[in-house]
Length: 134
Image (cartoon, rainbow, N blue to C red; front, side, top):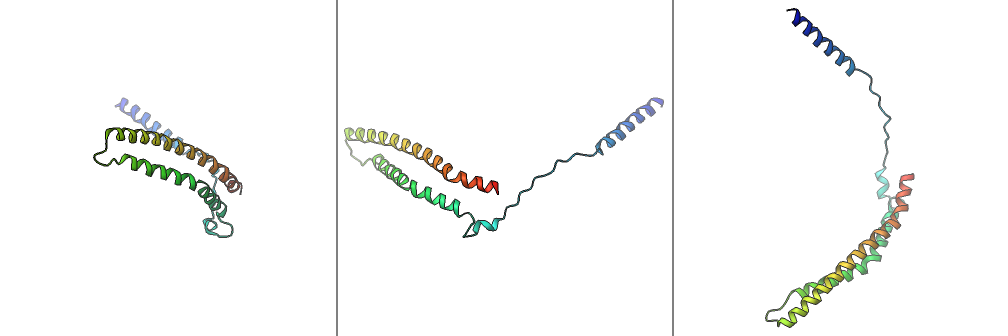
């Protein structure tokens, strides 16, 4: 009986101390809040016209490259569609042309991607900086 009282007192003290510890004041760091006025996005005079203009400029600059790559892909597809009764020598020539063309397409795509990324950063980074500063 005496042992049960000691265990009960120990459990009670543990429960009281954990409740007291749970009620300790919590330090809260101040929250940072940013406000975005989304109405300004559609404002035709200010808004995001600089960003839209930059993206249009990039689109105009890279349209010839995209058209060239699209033409090469079309040419590759036509090489891969072999008409029936094609001689073996002509099939081998078509296969070599297709492989060469595929390598050229991959290189042009990689070059275009790298140039696009660089040009996009050049045109949009100043806009992003001005948005973050204001």
